[in-house]
Amino acid sequence: MDKIIVTGGGALSGEIPIAGAKNACLALMPATLLSEEPLTLTNAPRLSDINTMTELLRSLGCEATRLQDGQVLAMSSHNLESHVAEYDIVRKMRASNLVLGPLLARLGRAVVSLPGGCAIGARPMDIHIHGLEAMGAEIELKDGYLHAKAPPGGLRGAVYEMGFASVGATENIVMAATLARGTTVLKNAAREPEIVDLCTCLRAMGAEIEGDGSSEITIEGVDRLHGATHPVVIDRIELGTYMLAPAIAGGEVECIGGRLDLVAAFAEKLDAAGVSVEETERGVRVRRGGGRLSAVDVTTAPYPGFPTDLQAQMMAMLCTAEGTSVLEERIFENRFMHAPELMRMGADIEVHGGTATVRGVERLRGAPVMATDLRASVSLILAGLAAEGETVVSRVYHLDRGYEHLERKLGAVGAKIERVKG
Ligand code: EPZ
Image (cartoon, rainbow, N blue to C red; front, side, top):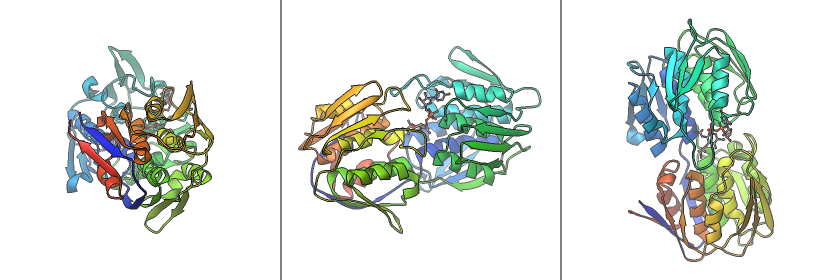
């Protein structure tokens, strides 16, 4: 298994290009199941998770081809042959469950393996299931698979209020509703930019959707959807991650393609810590001077709150801020696995349930550490940028799921970072 070695060094300077959003692309790709006509995605990120979703769609009989060095995804479900999403693919990536709604809407049936737990939590699918059942679907769990079928005549529009603003459940239910008979009103819907991006693409395919971005989305079912070409929105989590590189190492970096409006809650916390953040014509510029940063408190929440996917990375910065920071993780039940690894680097962190208390130290010391999940991995890389000496991060396959060419992008702004084939 590959390792990444980061040597703590001086300030960073230069530009980092921001790619298309993994979590938007993983919802957009299953949308191809809703139409017999081709769906083409541009600005697609080149990530192993996208490869996994491609493998899943192909296993259902879809054509899925990557063009232009992988940045264009040309897909068609004209020859859809199967409605079964097999365990050996789904277990690799929870987002595989996003084929459930589209398959039900298109074929009237779906058999989708439960993804199983993952490092950050149990991640059940009860909200997905209840929402689709409200639309008339019958769904039962057998041998680890969800067996779903639509009522005769297809799914019916429904009014459904989600118990939690689940991103994936919103995506599954909205996609299913585009072809249902009648009107669906989804209440307490997730408001993430990736939801808006999916609805924008679905409208381009002929869907009638209003209210995306708010907590109430209304979908008028239509008989069929046509093909479309859609640009994937930029990745706000990759953006936030790279904004933290100069915030931790010092210097000035411009994130090209970045949009400050997509990371407002996060940028506010950087500003409060003493990091300069400004929108430029080409993206977002982040600058950090020589002095120590200030501790800030962080509580994760559904969008537009502070994103849980940036909590680990923020903790890496707060490890050397002046004062004590309290981080509350309110979205997932086990998302502090980066804390013990940061403590190996000399961080002073106490974790009690969903709360981590970080007492800032002057400087971290490089150490061998282990990646445990996608965002925890990158927080260790970020911490290594300003640590004394070498940090060796193992199990970097976690990183490749969500960050394309990470060492190239950080190396280009002066970080001392290399990947060692293992
Ligand atoms: C999406 O996951 C993202 N993944 C996650 O990013 C992100 O952390 C999460 O949204 C929250 O923003 C993709 O978009 C592919 P949820 P998702 O359904 O849809 C509970 C990353 O690092 N829940 O909003 O699975 C669930 O257990 C990944 O890129 C239920 O209880 O998130 C969790 O505690 C990690 N029942 C909370 O809701 C359900 O039916 C949020 O889950 C569904 C969810």
